[in-house]
Image (cartoon, rainbow, N blue to C red):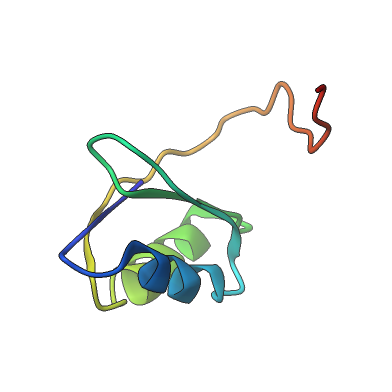
Length: 80
């Protein structure tokens, strides 16, 4: 999850979305401003993506990383 300073959310979201490690970026409501799904081969790679890339983007104030232990369901199918 990502908390922003006073910057345009869409502008920061686009910068994050352009990083090769990023699979998804969502602008959200609530205490945090956006969620970015980062996929890396190991924790070291995740650390580099967050510390060296995401946190260096102008406008990013704070990040929280949550690591998935196991994916029970992951799909792009929408039942409408």
